[in-house]
Length: 176
Image (cartoon, rainbow, N blue to C red):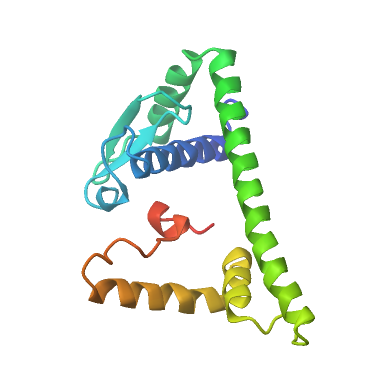
């Protein structure tokens, strides 16, 4: 966790528990609400471990003292075994590996389009699909234009609602 009595580690642990609450809510797990409610009355502090629904709702208008929240989180975490922590870490590692493999497959598509362009005598970055996918993978400003167009188009057509993605940082109320 941190150094006992260290205020900066307590703040980090509180933020991690708040982040876990938002993350779990965003994935449809307990805790029971998303970030829309964090500014409207309650902050949810949750266990960061998988398959654990423990959480504490703290009123925004009269927040608990940091030491009280720290004690609640620590008391709960002490109830977990080392196996619980290791299982959660392995799950996170597996998810990261899956994400990395997915990212690699997307880069294969970019490479394919670039190679096709070269074989056709064009510049490697001349294909607009490869440019858009590359911008999405790298996170450049050009991808914001794609996201804006997807949002605009999804608002207009029947059956198009919910097609536009929402950046994880925006869903979680944080910057990634």
